[in-house]
Image (cartoon, one colour):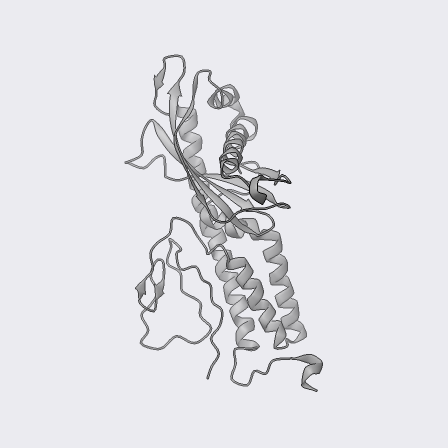
Length: 294
């Protein structure tokens, strides 16, 4: 019987994506749609991109190809794929969800996980602190690099002078407990298009992703609901023009990043699939067991 491959677990891309399988699809199989199709029907859409273990599984798939023996050109191809994953893993994970990972627009914050965390892992409240610090970096990037003409106004956003931001609610989804030694990388992105017809004139939402540098995947996701507030008048106020315009541009760049890095994922998938078909996933494949087969 033809072997079944380890395929990409995620079937939740927002754009139409063909599910990559190890075997040729049956002629009468239903075609994929947005979110792709499982054996029993459409999968439930997730609010984010690829499966968090996609990078690990892809590396395992390449390792299995090597176990069955590869030609020099195939070894070079697998090595290049591994180098690309190691170099771009943050972009493949976060960029494919619309997070801007290129300076200076990224809301980047890095911090080492402290030794001796409570109960041997990062305390839950610490993730909120990570996100809060990253949000300040996210805002200050506009003041220092993107829109210096409104530097004073941007700096007021993270203070209690003039028009600033008030947290209306925060929600944290914990994915796994981080432990020492590790380091987090935190990015922020807009959740909705601020120029959409149903967008609030007073508020916007951000989402932060807390990446584990040791595990190469999200350790937590933080959803923040923010309201623009006039501290001088003591009430909420509409988004000032300088803030609205930059948020609108940021949303457009996020959509471009999402499309670009999702295509990079599909490119990697196609190249890995080719190696599988040329190595272990063929009719006459024999595993290379080295000296054990002598």
